[in-house]
Length: 356
Ligand SMILES: *Cc1c(COP(=O)(O)O)cnc(C)c1O
Image (tube, rainbow, N blue to C red; front, side, top):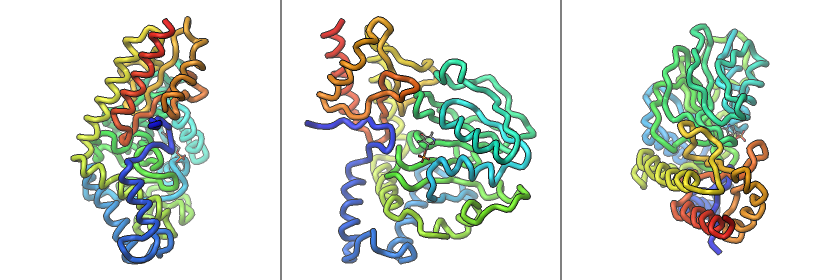
């Protein structure tokens, strides 16, 4: 049976990226060696990382004064690296979910944190809008897509202080005005590649302003200077990222990918909104195109397990909602084909017919 992979992360990747990565593991470019057994300082690997950086810059139209880094440690290490490198006295954060809270927790190790707004009052079912960013903050940190709760901030906001964004789960899902951000970071395992590598897009001139000593590995300057090759980077994961970037380019770029994502999300949200038994959990204007969360209406709550089983029987994978939301979450990342969304919709309609 065909599987429809709605996993939240690690998650679905373009089939071609997986196939080409498998080939590179067996034999990289006819070299007789595996991608896994060559030096990260070899010409072959340098070409891989150079192309990955160049494609990232091309696809997101990243201005000249930014660097693209491939680091280890996950997005979670960025929760610490950002304040380590940028926080002098005070940082501002937007609290929109569990990942934002984790970022806030780390920043507090380094200085004062002002949470400018929070949607915790409604279990993070919306992205706050009317708040002011303190002009004396060293930076303002946002989470553009809240993977667990299914809300998303899809506009590039204007910030009077350097803007830092965790884009782990929506990077490359839409065009972004990179010039409005000082740092964009994301774990690769949702929209770009396998687990093990984190992408950081950074404007160098925001660095060098804190007085504290920064350990070498945690200092962005180290990785900028060494082109992500200060130590051995996650070579294999970077290679798969490259394959995904090539795939995005072959489709026509990020705007094209956004169009596809919009279609998928519209189909599924329409089904949810027209359903007698399902209901979306997030306020309409904050809805994520990547992680679509829904539950069963109060009077049908006892049927959630039955739907889960039914959907499993039809090949749906990973649609169980996070425990802090319950119900269902369909992660519709770039690589998820529209056919999978249609299959889930058919499944929902069929279940509804039989149970209402
Ligand atoms: C998954 C996720 C993280 C954590 O990423 P790791 O690479 O596992 O550290 C952080 N932020 C967001 C928005 C995420 O979705």
